[in-house]
Image 1 (cartoon, rainbow, N blue to C red):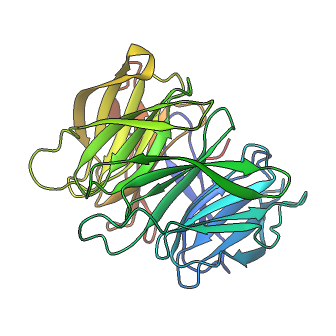
Image 2: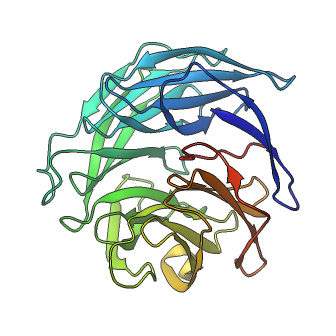
Length: 326
């Protein structure tokens, strides 16, 4: 895991120390306290690892835990800070680990494999690709690319167990990958990797039910652009989408209090295969991790949501995730 500092105005990135001892990290998440960062180990068997961030700027790997699955690809911290949620792509499973007061991880308290519905056409099996908590904290949603389904769970915050309460079916073969919630909490935007669409989903906080709308254009023309990840600005006014095959970023305007996306434009990402996007905490910069070009590119976010390249690409071996911290 590489560390770096970035200029909050220019976006220029300066390299820092490298954190060793984590096997094949490919996604990162930070604890609400800011004191611990968690990494997936995308391998078989899958695992998750905790890294302590000391006030003096040093880092310490404080141990990992197996997920019980394969190819761990995504993780997030529950808003309570007490549970780490992870998704295993290879085995199509999701896992819960307890987080101790010092940020370290305990043995898993639950693991669920997505055994139904059957996989989409040509998708081979379940492939859990993301697990996140809804903005209200009431439900945990798992996006499965293989079954074309988003599963909604309730998390028992005492026992650390998941209970399924709802399923949202996407178009067969669409390959849902990652979603991002509107800050209002009633809508989410879902990138579908295999049919090259963005889907607006209504969300019911009371039941956890997600209701997908029709697939919308990514603005990338013919061919498959393998959209990877949407991000939503803090004010809920714009959504950005990373398109890997097209090597571009799509900008949407959010309308009707989150219910509608209007395609505005696409801009070149300045790298190859943008796998993940992240906004800076103040929302002024957008970072793109470009896997195949081994670069992180940075964009200034204008008042109208327009993206302008900021500085030169930052070299980072196999850049697959960037996590801006306050």
